[in-house]
Image: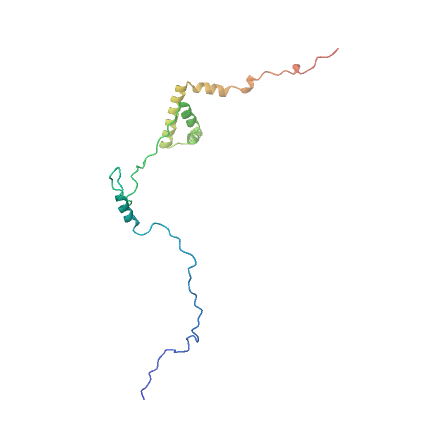
Length: 163
Protein backbone atom coordinates (compact mmCIF):
# COMPACT_ATOMS: atom_id res chain seq x y z
CA UNK A 1 0.00 0.00 0.00
CA UNK A 2 1.39 3.34 -0.98
CA UNK A 3 2.14 5.75 1.76
CA UNK A 4 0.18 9.08 1.90
CA UNK A 5 2.22 12.16 2.49
CA UNK A 6 1.17 14.59 5.17
CA UNK A 7 -0.28 17.87 3.91
CA UNK A 8 -1.25 21.12 5.56
CA UNK A 9 -4.42 21.55 3.53
CA UNK A 10 -7.55 21.87 5.58
CA UNK A 11 -9.85 20.23 3.13
CA UNK A 12 -13.62 20.29 3.72
CA UNK A 13 -13.59 21.89 7.17
CA UNK A 14 -13.59 25.57 6.08
CA UNK A 15 -15.93 25.36 3.09
CA UNK A 16 -19.59 26.42 3.22
CA UNK A 17 -22.15 23.65 3.54
CA UNK A 18 -24.66 25.03 1.09
CA UNK A 19 -24.09 26.78 -2.21
CA UNK A 20 -27.54 28.40 -2.17
CA UNK A 21 -26.23 31.89 -1.60
CA UNK A 22 -28.51 34.79 -2.36
CA UNK A 23 -26.96 36.38 -5.47
CA UNK A 24 -28.12 39.88 -6.42
CA UNK A 25 -28.32 40.46 -10.10
CA UNK A 26 -27.79 44.00 -11.26
CA UNK A 27 -30.68 45.28 -13.25
CA UNK A 28 -30.50 48.55 -15.12
CA UNK A 29 -33.86 50.15 -14.55
CA UNK A 30 -32.97 53.47 -16.12
CA UNK A 31 -31.18 54.29 -19.31
CA UNK A 32 -27.88 56.12 -19.27
CA UNK A 33 -27.89 59.77 -20.11
CA UNK A 34 -25.85 60.43 -23.24
CA UNK A 35 -23.44 63.34 -22.97
CA UNK A 36 -21.27 64.79 -25.69
CA UNK A 37 -20.93 63.97 -29.31
CA UNK A 38 -20.61 60.42 -30.58
CA UNK A 39 -17.25 58.98 -31.52
CA UNK A 40 -15.93 60.01 -34.91
CA UNK A 41 -18.15 63.07 -35.11
CA UNK A 42 -15.21 65.40 -35.69
CA UNK A 43 -14.19 63.58 -38.84
CA UNK A 44 -17.76 63.08 -40.00
CA UNK A 45 -18.52 66.79 -39.66
CA UNK A 46 -15.56 67.64 -41.88
CA UNK A 47 -16.91 65.38 -44.60
CA UNK A 48 -20.40 66.82 -44.29
CA UNK A 49 -19.18 70.40 -44.61
CA UNK A 50 -17.07 69.65 -47.68
CA UNK A 51 -20.18 69.19 -49.79
CA UNK A 52 -21.48 72.69 -49.00
CA UNK A 53 -19.95 75.59 -50.96
CA UNK A 54 -18.38 78.30 -48.81
CA UNK A 55 -17.72 81.96 -49.47
CA UNK A 56 -14.18 81.76 -48.17
CA UNK A 57 -12.29 78.58 -48.84
CA UNK A 58 -10.43 78.54 -45.54
CA UNK A 59 -10.07 75.20 -43.87
CA UNK A 60 -12.09 75.27 -40.68
CA UNK A 61 -10.69 72.51 -38.58
CA UNK A 62 -12.57 72.25 -35.26
CA UNK A 63 -9.31 71.36 -33.54
CA UNK A 64 -7.99 74.87 -34.11
CA UNK A 65 -9.21 77.45 -31.67
CA UNK A 66 -10.64 80.89 -32.12
CA UNK A 67 -8.67 83.39 -34.18
CA UNK A 68 -10.12 86.41 -32.40
CA UNK A 69 -7.43 88.70 -31.01
CA UNK A 70 -7.03 89.01 -27.27
CA UNK A 71 -6.18 92.40 -25.79
CA UNK A 72 -3.02 92.09 -23.71
CA UNK A 73 -3.14 95.59 -22.23
CA UNK A 74 -5.81 97.35 -20.26
CA UNK A 75 -7.67 100.01 -22.19
CA UNK A 76 -7.59 103.54 -20.82
CA UNK A 77 -11.01 104.87 -19.92
CA UNK A 78 -12.10 107.70 -22.16
CA UNK A 79 -14.49 110.30 -20.82
CA UNK A 80 -17.06 112.07 -22.93
CA UNK A 81 -16.63 115.56 -21.45
CA UNK A 82 -14.10 117.36 -19.27
CA UNK A 83 -16.80 117.66 -16.58
CA UNK A 84 -17.10 113.88 -16.36
CA UNK A 85 -13.33 113.44 -16.24
CA UNK A 86 -13.03 116.07 -13.50
CA UNK A 87 -15.78 114.38 -11.50
CA UNK A 88 -14.02 111.02 -11.92
CA UNK A 89 -10.72 112.46 -10.67
CA UNK A 90 -12.42 114.05 -7.67
CA UNK A 91 -14.21 110.78 -6.86
CA UNK A 92 -11.02 108.67 -7.18
CA UNK A 93 -10.66 106.74 -3.91
CA UNK A 94 -7.01 105.86 -4.48
CA UNK A 95 -6.09 109.49 -5.09
CA UNK A 96 -7.94 110.70 -2.00
CA UNK A 97 -6.27 108.11 0.26
CA UNK A 98 -2.83 108.99 -1.14
CA UNK A 99 -3.47 112.72 -0.62
CA UNK A 100 -4.58 112.08 2.96
CA UNK A 101 -1.45 110.03 3.51
CA UNK A 102 0.71 112.85 2.15
CA UNK A 103 -1.04 115.44 4.36
CA UNK A 104 -0.31 113.34 7.44
CA UNK A 105 3.37 113.42 6.51
CA UNK A 106 3.70 109.75 5.58
CA UNK A 107 6.13 108.91 2.79
CA UNK A 108 4.81 107.80 -0.61
CA UNK A 109 6.78 105.47 -2.85
CA UNK A 110 7.75 106.47 -6.40
CA UNK A 111 4.77 104.84 -8.09
CA UNK A 112 2.28 106.41 -5.67
CA UNK A 113 3.90 109.85 -5.98
CA UNK A 114 3.86 109.59 -9.78
CA UNK A 115 0.15 108.67 -9.69
CA UNK A 116 -0.66 111.65 -7.45
CA UNK A 117 1.37 114.05 -9.61
CA UNK A 118 -0.25 112.82 -12.81
CA UNK A 119 -3.79 113.17 -11.44
CA UNK A 120 -3.14 116.60 -9.90
CA UNK A 121 -1.68 117.90 -13.19
CA UNK A 122 -4.70 116.61 -15.09
CA UNK A 123 -7.01 118.15 -12.47
CA UNK A 124 -5.31 121.54 -12.90
CA UNK A 125 -5.62 121.32 -16.71
CA UNK A 126 -9.31 120.44 -16.50
CA UNK A 127 -9.96 123.26 -14.03
CA UNK A 128 -8.32 125.72 -16.43
CA UNK A 129 -10.40 124.38 -19.32
CA UNK A 130 -13.62 124.78 -17.36
CA UNK A 131 -12.68 128.16 -15.88
CA UNK A 132 -12.61 126.94 -12.29
CA UNK A 133 -9.94 128.41 -10.05
CA UNK A 134 -8.75 126.67 -6.91
CA UNK A 135 -8.49 130.03 -5.08
CA UNK A 136 -12.23 130.64 -5.39
CA UNK A 137 -12.95 127.26 -3.86
CA UNK A 138 -10.61 127.95 -0.93
CA UNK A 139 -12.24 131.35 -0.27
CA UNK A 140 -15.70 129.82 -0.27
CA UNK A 141 -14.58 127.16 2.20
CA UNK A 142 -13.11 129.76 4.57
CA UNK A 143 -16.21 131.94 4.65
CA UNK A 144 -18.45 131.44 7.65
CA UNK A 145 -21.95 130.26 6.70
CA UNK A 146 -23.45 132.16 9.66
CA UNK A 147 -22.32 135.47 8.15
CA UNK A 148 -24.94 135.06 5.44
CA UNK A 149 -27.78 134.90 7.97
CA UNK A 150 -29.51 138.10 9.07
CA UNK A 151 -28.89 139.23 12.58
CA UNK A 152 -31.88 138.49 14.76
CA UNK A 153 -32.80 141.08 17.35
CA UNK A 154 -35.07 140.34 20.27
CA UNK A 155 -36.84 143.67 19.81
CA UNK A 156 -38.61 142.25 16.79
CA UNK A 157 -40.36 139.68 18.96
CA UNK A 158 -41.33 141.94 21.87
CA UNK A 159 -44.86 143.32 21.65
CA UNK A 160 -45.26 147.03 22.11
CA UNK A 161 -46.90 147.95 25.43
CA UNK A 162 -50.51 148.83 25.17
CA UNK A 163 -51.17 151.96 27.23
